[in-house]
Length: 114
Image 1: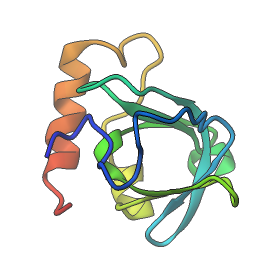
Image 2: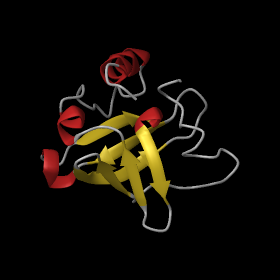
Image 3: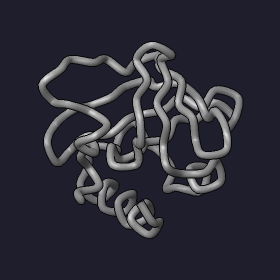
Image 4: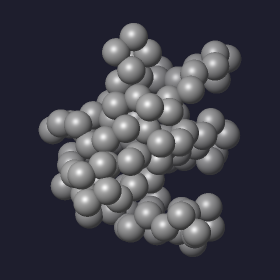
């Protein structure tokens, strides 16, 4: 499976869903809220505002780590722990769309079982 695509059982490209503002739940608890989400084939991700959890930082998660979306509860569940997300390559507003950053992030998240 491609790391930068949503799992077919999680997000149907035929429907419109804005994830901004949804709570993001790691396997061991809430990590923040979705600040931005993209839905491009082969280039999808979510940007999570962690609030005070990681001193107000943002993190970028490849779409493949999203395991479920609950529109009624406004929750996005991801298949990573808080520690795994905290230890990811640091998010940088100026370079997060660069191929080098995506490669580093993909290498990091690709190490974990899906």
